Image (tube, rainbow, N blue to C red; front, side, top):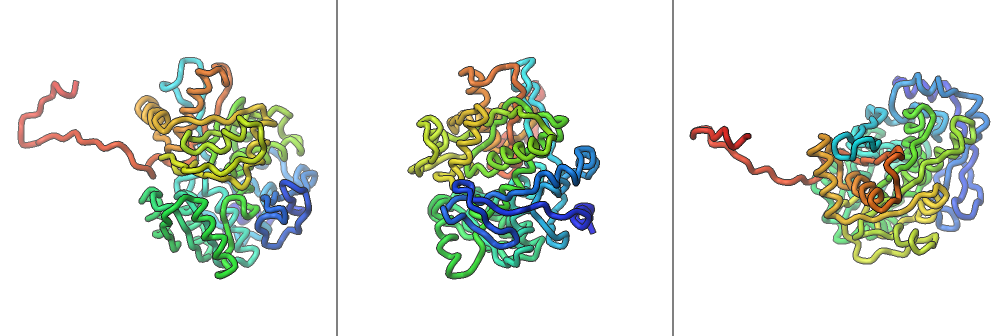
Length: 412
């Protein structure tokens, strides 16, 4: 038995019910759920008073790293359904040479998680709850990393998976999904087209739809990013968080985490300004924020090489926008050219290989600093959501012929 499973045997679940994020109507726990009757995401609710009495910050800090350590804040009931691939608390890595002197910009490097991305958090919870609720066949659309995480954790948990991805998904993602046990299919469309296939197949094949926000538990896994940040900063919070935003589950989850931590008295009222980062080629949240509306229309002809944020329509658009506005944050779009320039700068000056979506947050911070939307004295967190090793990189074609004299002057 793992240390995490031991935690689950020692502590009850504190879930009370689920709640429609738009209408507020109540749904029972311990039953499979998709979207609410209003067609909106469901949020898991807890008896926060009981959590406050059940565990202390010191106890949390004493536990081994990894998101399962926040057991009291998570919805899983039974230890036997926990799935783990060796999760760690992801590190905070400051940028030192690619930012101006005296400026504090810190990368939370989610690429250190199993399957190399922050999707491990949400999918571990989704798979564990699927096991607990008796679901055996899971399906989802993906731009790559979520599919890899679902495949890996479902295989770990003994569940079947069918996954659909756009046909221009990086080949390494497609191959790792299949190698880790899923049936994966390329689709000649975008992620919303893949999502339609999953939705249509639900009634025909009976699989469970694990699409972003179409089940309640991926939010709870992503919420652990906020719990981790609070712990890593001594139960304080940074000034600004730049988050690469496609479906926005992590941004929504962190905002929920901060609300729960304040409710039990572990943090104060201060919140980070939440910044939703998108590409100019696919920026529905940015447009909705600029227009002052709560729902983002479908973004036509979406394109960006940062495939993880190429989401033309987000089910939780209003939850993303509420968190951004309530925090005093903003939504910002950057060009693909700027994204890859920022990636190269962080790699060559700081030795940190960001994924394109993570590089988008660095580019967005640079743009926001120049425009005055952030200041030099603010402590900033950038989320690098996956390992840069999973993405195409520039070719290197420098060669040496060892049978000829070496021109050592060329290395100066």
